[in-house]
Image (tube, rainbow, N blue to C red; front, side, top):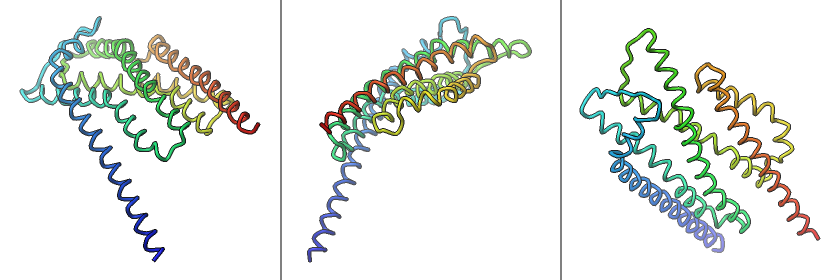
Length: 250
């Protein structure tokens, strides 16, 4: 009988856990849907700014009447996902909170705003610096031998391809801080693998920028600074963690 009661309790706990997860997913999807509607409505004002990008001379064409709707939905969905990241992170934190200690809960909650800020900074860096350089270079290279005709779909796909990855790469300090907090890595280990990290950054920069030295440097330098900043803040977290553990043993 006791065994049956335990099994029933376990089943109820699993059902409650599933119900909470289902509610979290529904709320996140609803927030994403509302964000998508807002972005699509704002797209009328956003698209001219995205096209008229400073020194980038862009003349785009549409291949059909429905293509504009696909562009609105495509770009709007990407922007909505980026806008929803902090909220989804908060929902995940709230769902996992009962399984975390108070210290872990506060630690993870403080990372959410920082992650959102770094993601936006990465997008701005890609949009204002990397994209104009890469786009102008490729357009100029193609114009040497061909008459260039760029569709709106191709333009926005390329724009997102040169900005979104940088937004995620800018999460590097947050990832390093989080791993240090969990004790997976310590700053000394990050220093030891510095040369390998730099090599990976160089490869990444060369792959997404034109084959010229200036473009590579414009991306490599911020990535190196992000890595060094990640080591610096990880050192602070590691030191505080060591002081806390020392105080608990006194």
